[in-house]
Length: 370
Image (cartoon, rainbow, N blue to C red):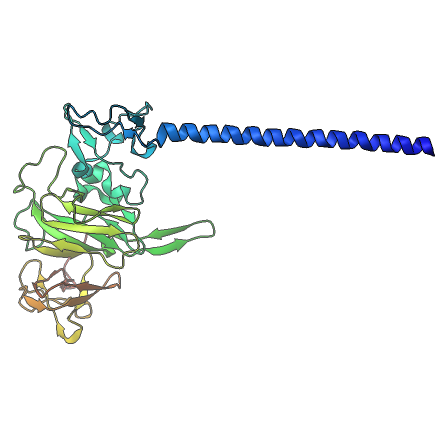
């Protein structure tokens, strides 16, 4: 028993000795880590936070040696150019891969007659169809390529051709502006689409004569526009973009979720609303007794089918009507009712197509339809 006690006690003494050495090593490591931390902090403080530090990116007046003994401090990465300051590779885009002319207000010309942009531009925004090269060159003829889904409207920039309207001055008149389409759901067991009929939309804009517009080159048109860039408004955001027409004092903001399609007009611009549908009723200022009558497209009286009459005056003349706040019109084929709000009282005229009365030939007469 005495030997066993001695053996056990001996083992215990050896274990205590090892434990003590381990604790000494831990404290040594802690002290070494603390010393390294103090040295690192001291170095960083002397290197970057020294009271004599100076921003080497700031220019000083000639002969000013107040910064001679000051420690230089590098610029933050957020203010450095990845290409010129950090040496990263850059890509020069040309042709269809380069930004279109709608971004001209965000760039300045370089010595080689190229555009150098002053800020990053969006490349995958939902409204990029409105800013493509085809839309920038000739929006009136871009068609469905320049359509975007704002929710709930599908918006385009190619209004119908108004050359047959009496308000068109020449055969070269085109309409600049935006199209509004209210889509419907087309669904199956595998997919769902938002579809629309191009004749069921309403266009807001103004007429412009292509021959009277000056300074148009081969990459421009009378209906072209650019992205707004001025100090009074921010026209680029994840929610939308602002457009300013180049040859008309007119602008519009296309915004995701917009409940209205809005166009702002300046001086010497005739606001125009076009639709591929025939109206059945036009009510002024929410007064059912105050209805507006349109003129015929020929300016002459038209004998209409009794059950399919359009609101056209008896003499076919388009008379002027005063609207204080709003105008409500219902379209026959689409069965849509649209409301137009005005920021100030205006005088309006309307022109409408009609279904003419067709005379039936006598039984012994030959009739051909094509």
